Every structure is written in C-alpha cells, then in structure tokens.
Length: 154
Image 1 (cartoon, rainbow, N blue to C red):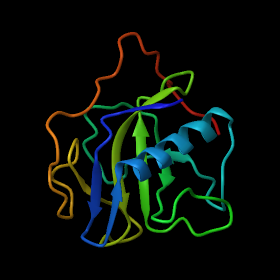
Image 2: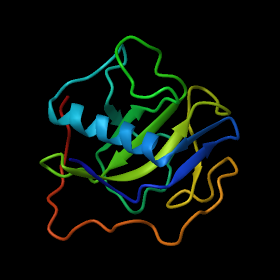
Image 3: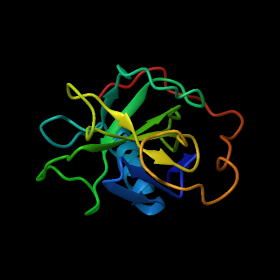
C-alpha cells in the first residue's frame, strides 16, 4: 500500500472542477504503482516526468516529479482522454512505497499548454480556485530514513 504525504482533503481547479481526498489519493497511488511496474498508459505515456517549466514552488518535495491524470470519473485508463487536470508527486521512495504530494495542476485557464495550480488545504493554499482550509496541519510528515529516487526510467 502506498503512502502519500501532505495529501489534501480536496482541491478546486479554477472554480471548474473539484476533487476530494479519495480521488487525489487514487491518482497518486495509481501513478506510483505504474512507475513501480515500469508501465505507462495512453498516447502520452502516463505517468511521466513533470519538468516544472512553470517554476512552481514544491519546496517540500524533491525531483524527480511524476505527472499523472486525475479524473472526476475515476482512474485513468488507456482508453480515454487524460483531460486537463494532473496530480504531481515527488520525493518518491526507491521502493515506490511512498511519495510526497506536490499539487493538482490544470491546463484550464493557462496559456500555451502550460499549467496553473489548483487550490487545496495543505501545500497549495494560494492556488486558483475557492477551496477552503478544512483542517489544521499539513498531513503526515515523511518518515525518517526514506531513500529517494534520483531519477525515473519509464
């Protein structure tokens, strides 16, 4: 079972789409499990490296980052469009058992296929959208002694 640190209770993407904790956890966990198996899905081969061209501040996590679609309808498969929204995780453990949530990002409202951050109640409280803080704290802290990936080859 994968552990995702700093996971929010939900998020709002530019007041268009909202995701709850279960949907965020599902997308993050699916990305980790596929990476562990060295498998990808779809034409764009998700999960894949997120290069952070927008220069977001993921101060609580380190590269490499993985990007993976998040859908209102559930888990992403080969047979559908990835939509506009993505989860990003980083500080991935070498055994793929844990990672740190970085953000939910959306192409909606951005230019040139870029991303904007969705607002959540943990690490992205200044993102776009109206998500209100639901609980105090940033979530469980990463365990001591986690060995992290330096690169991902999928």
